[in-house]
Image: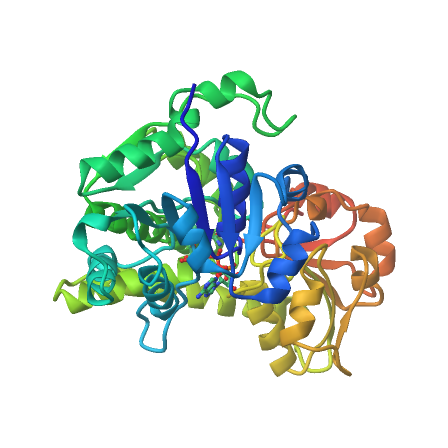
Length: 459
Ligand code: NAD
């Protein structure tokens, strides 16, 4: 039987909220803290405030029982043994991670530590942050024997966050003390021992089968670097295949065949070899920039990361040029847009390449009618509807009377549209697909001029 640990999670966003309900699902009692009163009230009432598969069910199962919500960090610190920090670490103007939220939480925690606590850094942070947290706790009067600071980076992906949390590829814990490592070991024991998988049938149809994940114990610095290096490597893989897709376009080769041929090599692997309009989201852009900045500060030449970023920027410009080449000119053209979120199955629009492209097309004098299954409300907050920008309720309304339809986000429902209906809705049957959602031959059969990324047009 696993030991239940009282846990506080500070920050109830995409990571903190998922972590909180998943820790409850694993058997622990959790206090979820946020300094946004409106958010805390909504969560208490059962509103997740974010679109994330399976999150509403888990919140309903545990809210106000095994997961309590509060703005009172002091009380949560006193009541809990492990305090997870899951607040944002956005990019600052210089490219570094802005750690001011982590610092603010640390100083607040310091005021309430009276017995031994493990402070767990779950936010993505640069190497040495754990050392800074320790220093800040001591500077704020906490005796060294009353705490340990541990790094436990999070690898979940939005859209599949609950499954990723409960069925991770690995659990990385950076701990420099045995006592703290033992607490983290106990927290994750339901997963690492397989006990959780034996007692639950999982979430039907999604993640019911699982091998217990490995528990990788490292130094705190290694754990911090593992997270940045992992995200930078994934971004590199995307930029690499995007550059290869451009080469395929120039030679009339097919990037899908190339990626398959590469991915069958077990040293390379098939995942993250899908070309598109570039990576975005709240993690890859800022984590690549922060990792580059760490290297710079340490005097290490990691200009490979600058190239990764450069290719990513170019990929959006290439897509714009592709649309221009299909429509001759852009000014005054009416474009239907499918997708605003940075990827499918989420409402997160932070650093979304789709929104960047919408802005670029508006700047070129196009008018846009856009649809996204979950991200319209968030988009409207930063890009309000106007004479040249309209939001609509479904894909066919976005296509209505448009000069071309652009697919910018890989929502699974965009791969299953009624092609005849789309064809009839469009003024000209032109689809420019930034996510390679369709087979070019099928699109040609259905009467479309269809352009995608790195694949020849079927005739
Ligand atoms: P988020 O913006 O969705 O959530 C952060 C939350 O922290 C917000 O609810 C905010 O109100 C709260 N907060 C800020 N200051 C606070 C304070 N002083 N006290 C209490 N609450 C406070 O961010 P997120 O996407 O959940 O990301 C959190 C961290 O996890 C980041 O470092 C991110 O890089 C990392 N991460 C994110 C993902 C992802 O897919 N979103 C995946 C892995 C790691």
